[in-house]
Length: 205
Image 1 (cartoon, helix red, strand yellow):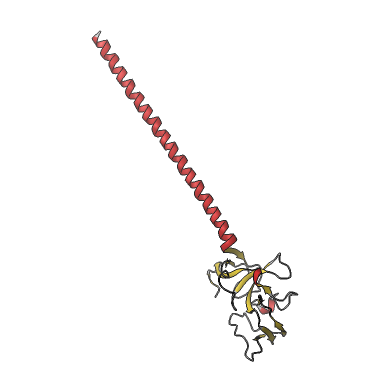
Image 2 (cartoon, helix red, strand yellow):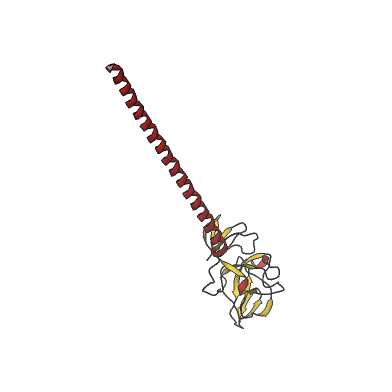
């Protein structure tokens, strides 16, 4: 009888131990599952934040653009991928020599990439391919040109708030010299080209 009770007591004790182990195992599983859910939620939040950050950067700060033509060779080659800084002119004015992305004045559904040559209020004339500003007898120095240009254009009187732009590849650039609306309005400038990251990374200046 005593032996029977002893065996029953041992069995009961083992059952309790097994139950406690099972309960602890279930609790551990619940904690692990909760941790996994928490980790997954954190990952989703980080992904959303990253996507929103990229969208904000793209809309407000930078533009990732691919050059479709050779009008800016050999500074920017056809197929080059470049970064445009949208904030470049928030606190500063566009300068001569800046390469800008803007809405093409004769068709604002198209984006163009050119270099600023003439500034607001200036008179610009092109003689034998050379640029002369404000009646100067000395042509503008343009070390970025692909080759010696030719042709006579102007004179142009650039209105306040407007910019005269041309491509570096003067012999193959559709620019201010030929447009109906000659100059680019300040408000139509999307940003300044600052960096080429593919295929040959480097500054554009």
